[in-house]
Length: 254
Ligand SMILES: Nc1ncnc2c1ncn2[C@@H]1O[C@H](COP(=O)(O)OP(=O)(O)OP(=O)(O)O)[C@@H](O)[C@H]1O
Image (cartoon, rainbow, N blue to C red; front, side):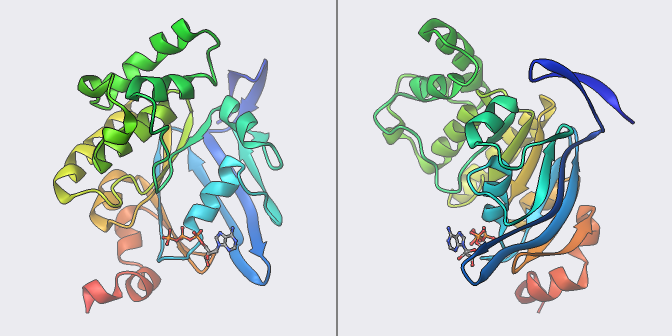
């Protein structure tokens, strides 16, 4: 079903798929890191991306966010071809991402870090501060608002990373291993937080190695191996797919 959305200074039609990826590929010299990958992500859904180390998950994020340009294929966001667009332009259109290794400004406070991200949408310091507040609260860092980012634990840095991404007011958010590297005790809180983000209406694509976490959060999943898409479907179907069992879950099922 097509509908009209105010976007980018004009009115444009879009389907219910917020993201359409067609035949996407990238080579690094002789290595084909992503090979002819096509998929669509429905607006408002959580789309989980699964695959062993080196499968091409982060590279796919880099392609969608615009940090890398594909060798082949197209990317459409809300019906608009964004292939070739710079990352800052995609950010203004509504695509945000987080990183596996968080990258806050260590010498700025939590609030200042979120204010810096809000710069995408606001110009004055007062506006940025006003915009940042709710995101600091949303991720549960109100009590750390005036602490330097370098003083945060890994779990808290992940929360800050989420606040920074949300402060750009994305409609599509790419989350790279939110629970990666955090202690077991912090994982349930981060899962709840991702579920809370989803309730805001933002569409999420998750890269996550923790099978329990990705199964719990995703509406739909895609399995990549050596840059190729081998399976896509609902979480239960992916968990039982022969390629996923053989190539990813093998050790756990042995
Ligand atoms: N800038 C680059 N230059 C050369 N090779 C690269 C580059 N970025 C990624 N690669 C290679 O592309 C392949 C895919 O890497 P990528 O980081 O996307 O995998 P991944 O699925 O995210 O892995 P992990 O789960 O370990 O993070 C790997 O073989 C990697 O070494």
